[in-house]
Image (cartoon, rainbow, N blue to C red; front, top):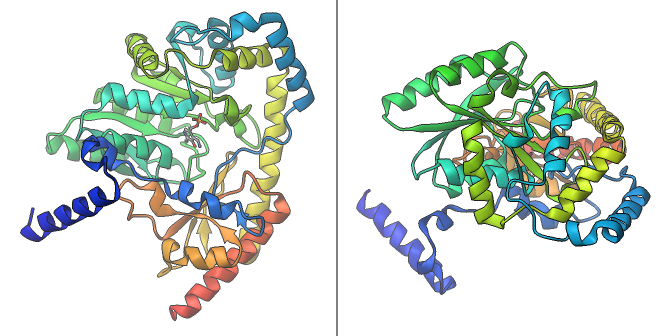
Length: 423
Ligand code: PMP
């Protein structure tokens, strides 16, 4: 470290300590945590005049609310003392059994004993990091990757290495190269974190051809795979390509979530684990929360057994298909000269900005023009790469609002180009 760098750090530390009397008490990892770019946009995007293509909030207006109201009341009346009690740190058995059915369209034949129920899959990411990561350990992730996962890995002081993708997802050759590079540096690689279906933020799927290749590479190199799949059931045209988990159950932790296929407010997700790993995760879960919400688990288990949940998923597919088509059409109409991904499911499209345009610089102008997006930098661990891309979420606004949002984005890009003399 140069003398100047160490002076800079001392000054920053002094300023932070002046602003927060508890600064010196924080652990090193706490100082690595930063607010996600999406959270900081929240206040702005909730203004009614803004079309938000920023957040990834699922569109749950179509939920059967009358039925849910009635069945929650019935559950409390008939089983209150049980469903309002503490439960198992692994999660309740009826829900773990039902989860096995939910994973079937994904080609997974899971064992309820290997499932750990968590507070959303976000908590599974946190607990997995807690179990596996020492400061400086390497985590392999796609370029770009899910902002919430990156934040967690960084909180555990991981060294995240991004690996290139194309329209067919993670590129196996690039994965091999990165493994070789990290090994040459003598650093431990703890896991590969991947989102194979309807990637966040990329929108693409890992092809059927590449799945066994990725699994084989990781098996050969003894690298655990974390397969994060919250969007798999939300393909516009049907069930997803079978999960990698089925190809190597003892080498993969598969993460699922009810946030997008049912409702995020229950905060319920799960991890299907290699056998020995399961107990480690149960211990971590107990230490974090004692047990996941018993009430929520009972509600979701009852919903899965007495309601046609798969039909509800089909309804969601239709909602997102309409919005996915609306954004593709609007991009073709208003920004035909640009490149973007063409997802066949999920929530997101990844748009490459014209040469010379920086998504961060353009943000205020976009907000002033009434549209919000998330700049690509949110999806890279260094917070710097990706300013030439933006993530556009099409999940929440109506198709008409999406069209209006893209029109405003096109106007914003044109103004920005003009100002920078790029027109
Ligand atoms: N993984 C990915 C790829 C996500 O996009 C999200 C939420 N946006 C999560 C995990 C966390 O979801 P939850 O905690 O609601 O299950």
